[in-house]
Image 1 (cartoon, rainbow over the protein chains, first blue to last red):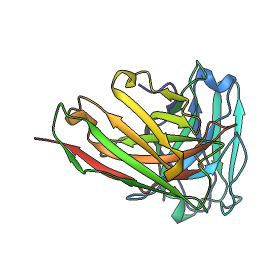
Image 2: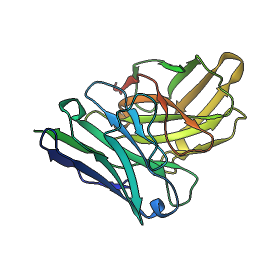
Image 3: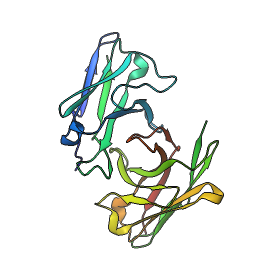
Image 4: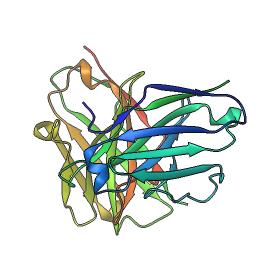
Length: 108
Length: 118
């Protein structure tokens, strides 16, 4: 079982704002990062170290964190944002990487 | 732009050892951690372990007894061996890069499907 917990599914109307959350004790001490995975494709990093965007990632993607919860916010969701989103960080020991179970985002 | 490419058998028999290699191009294998991650069909991502260019390794505790990751810096390659496989090890296996100071994956390979079946 994952030490990071995500809601299995979230939906958002086109153009609206959606927040995807990730909970875990280790998030009090280590940054969360987020990757996006579309069907049949490898994951792509969208946010790293809480709120940094790699080159080429639209600025509608942002990250935040409070206590044991990290969040990925998409402001003005687009149809192409429909995908699975995974948070990742370190586990409680700090020695291992861990992924959340993933959230399937549907854009209505 | 760094690129990672997995290679190895797509079919492994139960109880045998799964072996995969990842070739890194377009960048140095030094100063990064190199991970193996897997994804069973229709399921989420699972970190298997990583290796530093020096050979330092760290493995997922749930797989540690069966996993060996090695690196060949002269060939810009790192490899995964997973022993005593069962059908539960059937998955898409990805190789990936983690910056030394981070906990995230910044580059992924395309993944290779490994099926465990007799």
